Image (cartoon, rainbow, N blue to C red; front, side, top):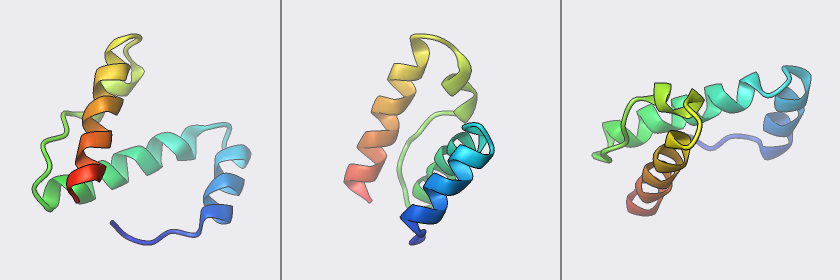
Length: 65
């Protein structure tokens, strides 16, 4: 994955009210899928309880990248 400044990520998250956090998850998901991970569509983030499955798959993608 692309290296990002952690402090800037937190500041942007706070300024945008959490929207940047969603963008960050989607962009890292795309980067990991390009490298061969199998992370499902990011639309699952907004569905209650199903988002736990999506985060689980995202964490598996981080582990394999």
